Image (tube, rainbow, N blue to C red; front, side, top):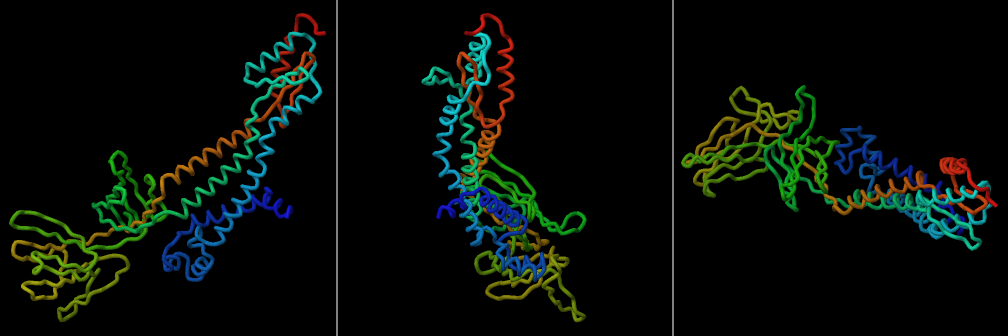
Length: 419
């Protein structure tokens, strides 16, 4: 049992686990997560896609083996930190005892040297303690003993809060039309300023320009997002998820001049009085005119709508007539005019919301890690034993700077020779 416990708390085991977790996290950041199976087939080919799906690499942060690795790593860190804490807590006292029992290796030749050394150590904020045999022990940077403990603790907290950030987001998929805004549950608004599926050279480039604003309007951010370039705003992360093409129709009231533009994505009835109006059935990307003048509607044109056509039902006094309408055409019904416009491309957004306190905990963990590394490398515990006969320096690392400073003080000798 002791051997098992020793293995689980060993640094070697912890480093192996950490490397594996980091490698899987890198794979999870490079491979799009939680997409439809066909997305991976199109991107990587059928065989690679099946391998990725089988291994769980398409949702790696929710696989059993990722959970297991994180649990083992947390166990390793807890054993490294918690079980060693009592020993760490007593390290300062052990250093003091070591200094008290150490032999003097730097003798004084003049009594002024003793006074200069003790005055200097007090001036540079060493803590003085008098021992039972009359010697003085000055200590500094004893918090350095806690550096390793806080490093382990910070890594544990980073894993904890990082896992919660990855595993507990609230995910919603939303569509938003260019020029329109959607309001999230807390009042945050996301406006789609523009969207395109091709850049100016004709290359496929699914990109949206979004403006996010806080509920009180005091904070806002505008950013262009792409599939692998999400936007972060507050506790939200907004991804370019998919896209679609919507029909557009302008409804004009000729009596009062009111104008409204409606986007058409699903079948719907646009009515004047719930009796007369037009029923939108579908939008087709192109058509082919037969020799007899009839139309054959084309359902797919490789992502583009070169010759869009609307299929609708015109309904008047309960009578319905099938109609094909083209952009620019109008249908008049009493005081209402329906004008068919060019279709508009729109983005589908995936919005992930993580509780703000989780990000706060994650930032705190990174801050703690920086402080812990500073304690490890720049705060080296040191103790100096001083008597009227001389002094000695005790530390786990070289104290060349302190040795030079104290030697320089002793070199400024003069006055009466010590007893």
